[in-house]
Length: 437
Figure (tube, rainbow, N blue to C red):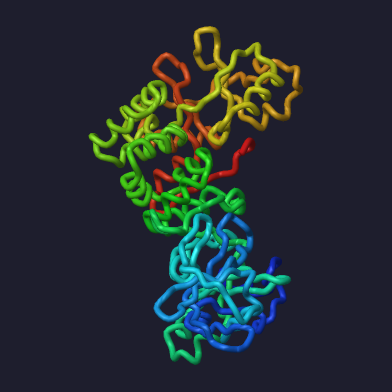
């Protein structure tokens, strides 16, 4: 089967949104507009376009608020209300007389040519990082909006070619601006005023891909736009080398917070890849209970059951009702690694490992002890080798395996996808779907 082109670049104007069905002649190239004449109502040239300014408050299509125009040796400000028409070759103003003021950058506004073109952005729909070779404006009613970004090589060549080519919009590979998440240089004018709501629908693996592709400053900004759970889930999906580099780039306090929000086994794996001094400093910045849990996991080699397990387990008494356990699981803040429920006796010793599918097909008022199998569940101890874990998981014919201490008390659970990640790390991270995810 031939490889399909990415959706972000193959759709052009066929996708829903402002660009759908838009004729090429209705688009105005921002790069082509730079240096073009600005004329008053009497057709007298008063200056040349230096830049286009838009309001930057998280709108799907940012509106133009004005132009920066060179008048003699001055850079003057022309508000959008004074603009009669913008074409690819010319800007016409509404009046023959203007009160031109010196241009000053204002909060919440961005200059497109200086601050956006050639800067890193994320196409949320296509889930990739790109740099805009050009930006396009479109007229809506009396005003103009920023409607798209072009990532085509042909467009870049047009910008680099003769001046007579630059003003003509030549849409090559255009991305609808509504699907774009822009990022700016640290301390620069292009910042995230309001996180793009489209980010919320990206899966952790897709966010991880973006974090791996972005530059350092843009990565920090993307992390800042995500809530703590989203950020932790994305970090769990990153490749080890990329995650290690990212954690080294962030401030110690920010790194400690992100690692503490990760699943315990994933957090321990991330900490193992750091040097001892850095690891100890991060643990010292965490809540004592979280740090103690991670120190416990770190005592095990990553090639043992203890190094593979997550300590996020659910233990219940045999007299607990199915309905009560369901309520408990639904109230869990992060049920992603919960694959089953450990039934224990009064001493905390394992009686059975009840998988979620049986729990959610049982009668609500049934006691979980009545669902136990007569044969005890297969388990491994924390010091079991990865080969022993593999054999036990295969023999158990289950997507997970409980880890118990020498007295038979559950201390962790190994998920099949974590075992596969350890066995074939070069294949990248694998995640099986979870019933509660």
